[in-house]
Structures are given as C-alpha cells and as structure tokens.
Length: 267
Ligand SMILES: [Zn+2]
Ligand SMILES: [Zn+2]
Image (tube, rainbow, N blue to C red; front, side, top):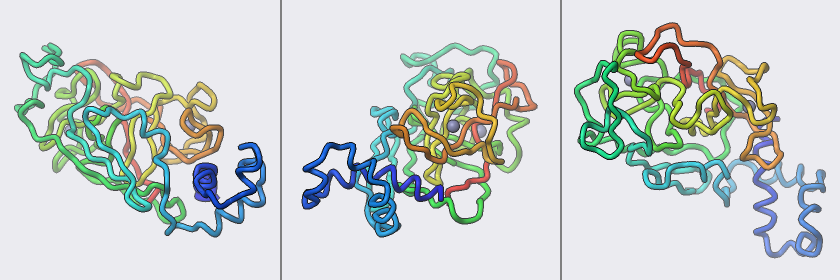
C-alpha cells in the first residue's frame, strides 16, 4: 500500500506528459488528481518497470556545487564530489571553509586533500514490500550538503571510540570519505529539514516532521513513517527521521543524535 502511494505521487507528472491524453488537457489540472479511480488503475498498470520521468522534488535541495543527480530508467544516480558546502575543521587551515575547532580530536586526513567522491544509484521508487536490510559500514546515503552519511560503525568497530573526532556538525574523516554520523546541525538542527537520501531510495529528514511541525510519535524501528513532507505536494510518502533519542556517547560538543542506524526498509 505504501508503495502505491509513492507511485501515485508521480502520476500527475506522468499524466501531464502524455500528450495523447485528450481528456487531461481539456480539463483543469484538478481532474488529474481528483479522478481517483483512473489514478488507481494507472498505478497498477504502470508497475515497477516503467521509467520515472521526473526527479523527486526533494532532490532540488541538494548542493549543486557538489552533486550531479539524474534519472537512469527507474533509478536515480547521485554523483558527488563529497565536499560539503559548510565549515569544518576538516577542511584544513587556509581553506575558506576552515573552522577552528580546537576541542576536536582530529583524524590525520584533511578534506581538501582527501578523495571524498562517491556515486550511488538508488531506486526512484523505493521497494517497501520486502524485508528490512541492515546497514553496513561505509556510505549509507548522501546528505544534501554532498557529503556521505554513515551509520554508527567506524572501521571494524563502533563509533564510540571515535566520537571525540567528530566536528561541530557530527562528521569526520575516518577511513575514507568525510561523513556524518550524527544530526548534521549545519543543515538540520532540531527541525524538519531534508538531511539526505539513503541507499534504499528513502529520504531522511531531521528530528521533526513537516506534517506536524513536531517530533513524530509513530516511527518504526528505522525512524520511518508515512506522512506528507515539504516535498510531496500534499501526498503521503514513506520517509525516515533522525530518531529523537540522544546517542549515549558525547562528542566534543556534547550529546547529539545518530543520523541513521537502520535497518533499511526500502530494499
Ligand atoms: Zn566515521
Ligand atoms: Zn515525517
């Protein structure tokens, strides 16, 4: 059922693009969304194999200096330099975005000399019908800033021992790319802002939900639920939130919130 709701979201766009559909062009755009029977039938007919014709509106929130995002059939490809558009100590002294953070236990790498580039391919329409899938160490999603999102694992162990190396926005360079483990307060600080897209094609938002302007109280184990968001034009859609429970290990800046631990629901 959730899947159909997501498919329905794209239908008005698809329908508008079908020039042969005289009825649609002879009516106001209201007829597209108000004719529920037609919408339902088309949703079933369109199935998974039909290419999506429009990027989800939420992708407009991504940092265009870092990311190139495009449709490839029923997939969305996100290419990123991995270089975020906000300050961090990890830019290194002399960089315009360098931020002095003397309390951070710096890892050896500096962003401006590190290869942070990542490309991910996700379903344009997440498959919410199957089993949940655990997240792994490494990139689990791309944030709107262009940098990677990780879960609560660090190298072969847990994040706990590395937490003091996290910068003001919950990120560091561990092995590999610059990445967020915690609520990235540079662009989502106790609000409903879009945080990023995860590998299962489901969007991750801040601790609050746009549908209520408050902390959601109906989240599943992944931090997910189905409601409208600021990017769904009134349609309900499954999405994740940063779960509003403090991570038990403090950083140099105090306690924060894990960005996403999983499991994925969209694989
Ligand atoms: Zn890390
Ligand atoms: Zn929500």
